[in-house]
Image 1 (tube, one colour):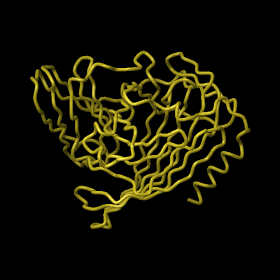
Image 2 (spheres, rainbow, N blue to C red):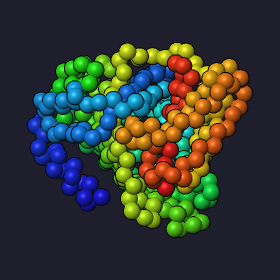
Image 3 (cartoon, rainbow, N blue to C red):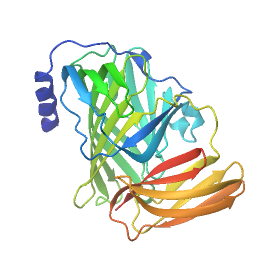
Image 4 (cartoon, helix red, strand yellow):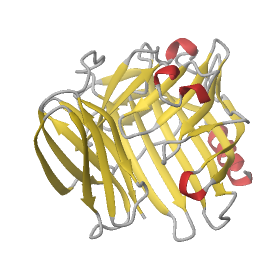
Length: 341
């Protein structure tokens, strides 16, 4: 916590005291909306400095072929939604991440997450992510804790610190040629420990750094970068991803042909199972990409009728780290993160 506080203090010390627009709960998405993001090659990406009147130029960045969607759904529509009774929004990312929030006129609180083994992590000590109104230089520091079902490792404990900083405003230039001239930048630092209460050795520590750019009038980040450093008994494993919003598709009303897409186990050593349900007949294709967007595995599912399916993906020859498994058929695509340990 000492190092994190020092870092935030250093950033704030360099930030002039003027902001382009004040953020409120109205600047975050409503339930029922859907957004698409385009992945970028992380090499050469530099988030730049904080401060007022900055220019963040990513116009020359290259797409890596890994896209992501964000659907904001009612918490009750998730099978584990009852575990988060105070949540008003569920952020459903197509890489398998679910986050539950309660959003009101004065704050945004993280109620919990879904674990890698699809069990709910409902926070007993809930971190407040933002307090509204949110202005330049505002810092929110809070703690989190949860006793939850860790699946194979039994009862588990999650605890840590969650910190957000409104550190800059200015102009954002994206690879699709768009220039956003009224952008706020939010930085999130989280230090998270997950520990089995049965197997003390099964402990992992995560350092999360997420930087998001918000344009006035658009209720989700128009771009974000995310870096995760995970230590689980060995050398830290660091993954980084960068996405910007695809403005050609803002809201998706057409349901996907794929339902209940899951990867298990995850993390994995040598083989992973991809399971899914089809609502109709289609040709299914499974592709595995590494973090730089290179295609490392292709599995032709062939013509499949409506029903449930399970595909085994051999990963024994792949290096450890993060990958993306993409299940597609024509215009329908579902992507999930896969961690090889």
